[in-house]
Image (cartoon, rainbow, N blue to C red):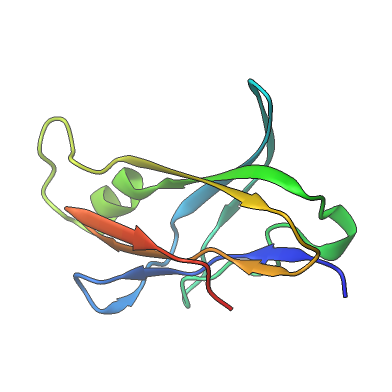
Length: 117
């Protein structure tokens, strides 16, 4: 079994998938943060392909950066200055060749995550 990485973003305030939310993936090596790719969620709040497919998977530390503020602006959530949640970085480690699913549950004033399946 080869490892791979996926995500899913749900808008818990509206009770629906967060469509069109931009996500950056970085690999963290010591103090170096390397941008690997940018993906956007589809109408189901998922990416069209695995963020890190088996052929690109490597053990290590990664960061998903969710551009929540842009999404909230686009759906018409009135912005405060500065917006309470704008950029949400989630740093996590992948220590086994498995499926890592790192979802984000989002509202304008809170978020949570977990290791899903």
